[in-house]
Amino acid sequence: MIVLELPGPRIILFVKGDILKEKPPTKGTESGALFAVVDINPQRVLIGLQFEYHIERVLDIVIPVEAGFCYDRLDHFYLDAGTIEQPAIAKILGLFDGTAYFMIHGDGIPAFPLGALQGFSVAAGFSASFVWGNTSVGLFLRIRAGFDVGIGFKPPFAGRVLSKENFGFSLCPLKQGVKLIFRSNGNDTRIEGRICSRVSSSFLC
Amino acid sequence: MHHRRNENPGARNPALDWLVNSVQGDPTDVRGWEPKLDQWAFGVVIVAGTMEGALY
View 1 (cartoon, rainbow over the protein chains, first blue to last red):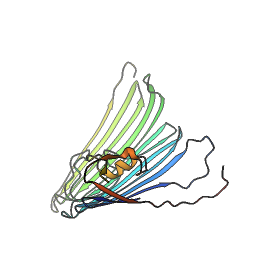
View 2: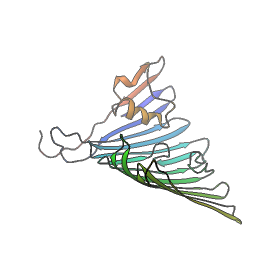
View 3: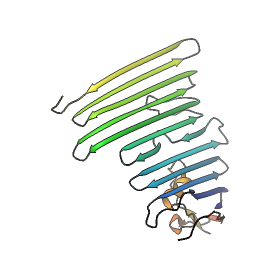
View 4: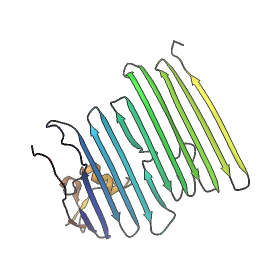
């Protein structure tokens, strides 16, 4: 549907597409949808797309993709496939969870986990976890790993890497993390690193 | 005429947020619109699709 809104003017294109798929069973709960929007007004253009696919108790996928451009500030643009606050999500069988994001911003990414990125910035992150057991009674096995990588070009070059691992039973969790920060102004380069590991126990171990 | 979409201006992409969360993909859903004097909207819809296999 294309909509013209007045005053503004504002022109918006709404799209909803159902995904090509095999015929579901008569009482099946499978559903998939694609939502897309192009929003144009005299100040900016916003483009948004969200892909969703659900099979009850089996698969749950949500992938948001957004882009925005301002006419008055050309450096104020963004292109995000998932974001730090709202990453793309995949859940499989209720056991495996995965999240991911990839962001390109013209004027910085303030929400980056290891500190704000400034200027033209690129950030990406991935996290996956496996949970087996009953979390409601606190007796379960969890394995989790992820990383965040970000590069900002103001000052000239600054990058940050954060890696996280988390493994253990609920009664004896083990956490590990690697943090790496590097900065360069073209002449001098500084690299900072930190590795940490932690084991906490309730009454075992 | 004299209606506007009740989108959330705080959303990052208000129009997409409105389409997904307020009207579940149907812009003609009246629940997504509210009265507002001197706000006009004109819309055109195209429905396209393919189908194969047996009907049931």
